Picture 1 (spheres, helix red, strand yellow):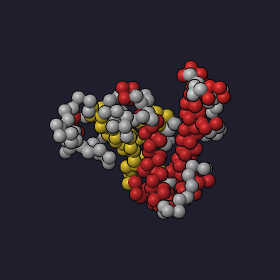
Picture 2 (spheres, rainbow, N blue to C red):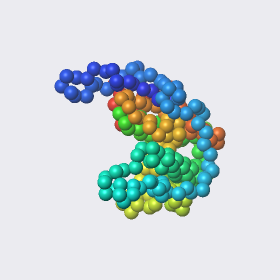
Picture 3 (cartoon, rainbow, N blue to C red):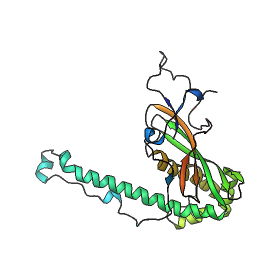
Picture 4 (cartoon, one colour):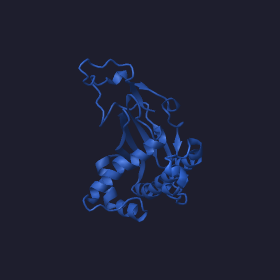
Length: 237
């Protein structure tokens, strides 16, 4: 799981400016359950479930005309079943979107000989980020993210994503930029959520880390020896 620097007990400057960035040796590596993530290895498949109803279709209890005129709203107990149903509907929709995405992207990566991708993440203070670092081919060759993006553009990944309903073509973005955004941000973020939980980065702390996605094994595994590489949070050297 992530390397974490706890900010809850640090002393803030009297002038209310930000404290200096933490050093790498001040971070502590937390096991998955302690951070709120999953036990490793996290496993995934390419199975796509039937598309569920939109969360917006979940009905909520409405007050009677008399209660509306008097400004009365349904009680928490009356709303509880609908709130639970909405939570379940959102979870089902998120799972469908994730599986549809994986079913479109992973085979394309496999056709290019990609066995693993290595993603990094950072965040804290209610923000979490993830991005692609590199890929490893089945012959052991390691390629950087820009080379992989170029290959995916040539392999028409964007057309596959559009055909699957994952995304659409944006006229204001080049195909290269759209594929790069998908790989750097969207795909790695989905795997980060599988590993760390949807709320990773929430709370008074700074975190960083990295993980490996193995497409042959269908697993996501955190790297306990990840270097302190960040994009969105500063670490003192």
